[in-house]
Image (cartoon, rainbow, N blue to C red; front, top):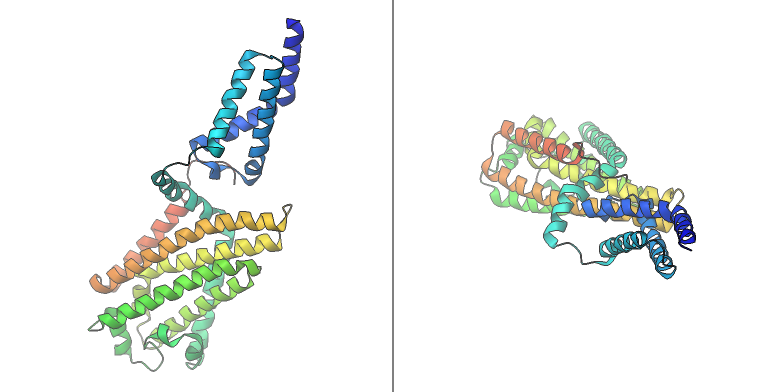
Length: 333
């Protein structure tokens, strides 16, 4: 009789062991990192593997199979239950994991869309620059009056230089900075949200932002203060423009998932893209807030063009290292 039990136990293990091993590997990865470390296919398979393990445990108990096997399955099911339904980690742990893993991983996951968003911004900025240089009246049709804040083709070189260095115009500069932050935050949020329309409105918003930037640059360059404007922009613009490019990338990812869902249902593809895009967007809001602080600090305490350019370059290098510096592999995505 005991021989039959051993044979049955061996057959039972052979039939289900691959699923148990896969479940154990997935749970071990979740325990070491988080459920976000799992690839999409593994994420969908996890509850199915858990139910299969529960069924195996019930069968093992009912047929009095190998006690060690029963103990192994009990431990595996308990670990899985705790990860799926147990109390969530502390808020501090979740915040730390967001900054150390979730946000950088989400940004790396949309690198192709980020490159596309960047190239579109550069092309649109060049177009805006050339349009305004060829005919300054284009400026008034591109840049809103509130955003221009007196920085238009009719301004003198001295007036434009004053707006960059704040000589006696701190209130006006602060108002402009607030408008600029609100404007760019709206572009970033809408760039992601409108990705639901297959990414077309996202492309228009990113292009519009680039054209506006190019038009502003043309005004300053025409009056001989283009380098000073670039330095003023760099101190906060490397962070701010990077954030908008990432928002556009998140919108493009959402639009592409809807247009080309691959093997998934269109709704499932949109959910997966929206989840990673939302992570990118939370970080984008943080970047815009950092840009606002940099703009305020630069306006009040840093008046050297070289120092402004240096801070901007350092911030850009820091963001690139933070997002794209190779890390320990954390599972397929």
